[in-house]
Structures are given as C-alpha cells and as structure tokens.
Length: 330
Image 1 (cartoon, helix red, strand yellow):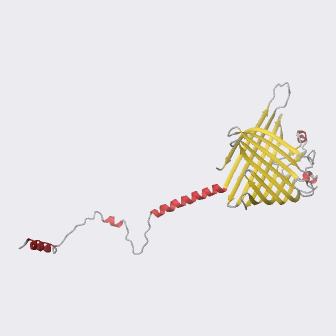
Image 2 (spheres, rainbow, N blue to C red; image 1 turned 45 degrees about the vertical axis):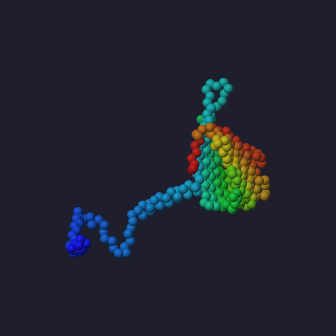
Image 3 (tube, one colour; image 1 turned 30 degrees about the vertical axis):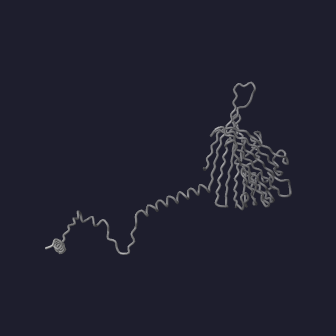
C-alpha cells in the first residue's frame, strides 16, 4: 500500500473518534455576581454618575463666578483720635480729646445693561473738653441709583438721596448747657429724587435731570412750629420741584496711595437761587492701616434760616489722622 493512502486512511479514521473536554468551576457563586441581562434592557454605565457630579460642581463654580462679576462690594471704617493734655502749663489751655468715626459702604450690582448701586456714608465725632462733651461731626447719607446703558458712556438713570444726622445738635457749648437745640434727627432732613441721563467716563459721572423733586423734613414738633430750616410754620415737610445736576469724581492717584472723592449737587425750583452743595474728601494712606483724611464742604441754602447768614455760603473743613481698614471684593 502506498504511503499517501496510509496517511489518508489514518486521518479519516480519527474524524470518528469522540472528543472530551473538562471545565472546572471554582465557586458556583461567581456566576451570581452579574445578574442575567434581559432582552432590550438598558444597561447603566457607572462612569456617567461621576460625570454628573463633575458637571454639578462646574455649574456651582460658574454661578459663583457670575455673582462675583455682577457684584462689587466695598466697606471702609475709620477711627481718628486727637488728644491734647496740659499739666502746670504756663501758656494755659484746656485738656481736650477729639474722636471721629467714619463708615463708607458701597455695593454695585450689574447685569448686562442694567446696574443698581447703593452707597452709604456716615460719620460721627465728639469733642471732650474738661470732661464736657460736644458734638463736632454728625451726618449720614444714603444714595440709591439705578441705570440702563444706552451707549458706551451714556445711560438712562434714576437717583434717590437721603441726608440727615443722628443726634441733637447745638450751636455751641453755651447753648448746649442751656439745652437750646438747633437740630435733631431728620430735623432737618433732605430727600432728593431725580431722573434723567447719565454720562460716565473714567472717574467722572454727570447726572442731568430735567425733572427732579426735593423735600426737606423737620420732624421735631417744636422746630416745625417755629418754621425752622426752611419749612412753613406748623408743617413737617416742604416739597419743591425743578431741574438738578449732580457730578461725582472718584479716583486713586500715586499707585493707590491718594484717593480723591468729590461730589457737586445743585437744585433749582425756579423761584429762588439754586441750592448748591460741594464736598470733597481726600484720603492719604501712610500704611495699610494708617490714614490722613482731609475734608471740605461748601453749602448754599437760601432757606437755611438757622445759619448766622442764611443767604451766604456756608463752609466746613477738617484734617484728621487715624486708623483705617477697607474690605472689598476682588
């Protein structure tokens, strides 16, 4: 028999032999780890949950950044102290202590073209002479402004300003000893409301209002009965209407060492000379916590009948040195 036929016969005979295989399962419970998958059943992939957690964290971070971009906050507190003491001093003099507290708050919210700004300024000072105190500074101002931008430097705007003092005021120490009051809380108080167009470029802001209202309050009954501070006798409030203009300037100089803030406001009711108020504050920072403050104010109010010269310009100025600290959003 030929070799080729022998090989073919052996291969064909092996095709009919049975084949055996053995599989060993170490633990039947291993098959129970994965449940059977039903037909057309959705399979959830675990990493998707992790992406959801990451997305939520990103959304919170985006919201936080948007709030930070839309809101600006600034709070400054100052405390100033000046003391003079004498002991067996031939030149004479009275021991005195001057203290003044300033608080300035500013918040601005901006969303697209809309902007709302709140500003609060308050100061209060006492002068102690031979254990007798006398108020030498007392004022608070609350200003609200809303605007809608119509151009790069122009916007429609509305403004409201309230100004008064905290406690009773006297002309001098002698009048204080006699309890002859000259002013008190909201006696007088001034409220100005205006609407118009605002121009803003850099540190300068100008608000022109063809229509505005001005009100002066004397809530103290005794003062209103006597017709003090420009209100009619027996009245608590006097309203006026007319055009107004307001200018604001706020800028840092010399690498944030000197800050100059100035505000000019004028109102006219067409029947008398315009009211005029100009105040300027210059802050000079020696260090992060030490600061010198220069303040000046010019004020004209034809109805201020408690002034020595009612129809003349009134002046006020001060120079002080003390502690200062500012908190503001970055």
